[in-house]
Length: 402
Image (cartoon, rainbow, N blue to C red; front, side, top):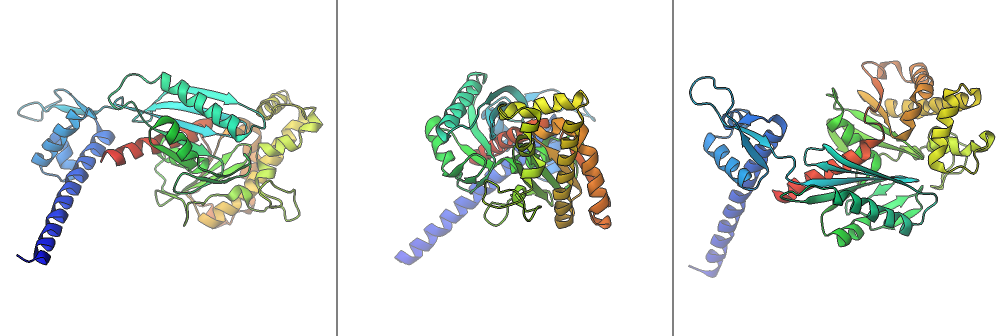
């Protein structure tokens, strides 16, 4: 046999081995995903749902049992003959940490592999340096890690949502409200904790959480509007998170809605988030005697005033709702979504911003765009981003595991 023939044979053997390995792991992934989504479930039902033969299902189930990702609990009900053994996903085989980094806060949560929240941690700060946020981040991760119960895989990963543009390598390219530029946060965290880290735009993570965890949501075209100190937009289009050509989609908080408006930290003038987020409260805080108040307290204090019937506070919230509506009209006319969900901290002021928002949309969005459109406030409150990045971390674990 010539050297070329030997080389060709070796290549064919390698390809065959690779293909067999890929198919095997692909089948295991299918079986695991079926158990995760449909447990409790029997081996026979897995075969029915996946189209895999019973032998393949049985072998993959055996491996998953050995790896402690599933467990048996049975027997189940019989339709005739021997009762089947029931299989369940072992959601406590490992844990993820999800972190939401805000302009004036860090919110973190520990979840199991199914996204159930086990522990939460909140920290606030005012005008911090990157080094100060870094230390708060370490403190949050250390705290949550200390509450993780003993498990087979331990902490499988850390997900971090940031209010800015992130690239596919986990670098924060620009987060103007934090004053960050070209921060390699992924490398910093992986070096510190020696586990996989996922960095994602906070609105993308929030959108994903709304799709994955919001009850009763079957829509495939969802726009999530995260309203905090800034505004971010996450896009679920045709059932998938849309990140854009380079991963920078959704920076709609910086679309111009006032041509001669106020200068934004991004360098533009008249950005949407200056008029429709907590920044509008901050910029008007002096008239309420709150010019020296911490940023994280202004929203709470303004809500207290509105609840007491303060007309100026209510008027300011109404104006914010009106400006939110203006931006959402542009989103509706651009993407024709089935649903728009408003999330993050500003949802606490829903009572005063919802009606002007809806009125603005009803009056000015193209009438045919409004057909079958839902506009809702998040029932995940300010937890969407942390839930979303924890879910990304879990999914990253299963990709690595495959």
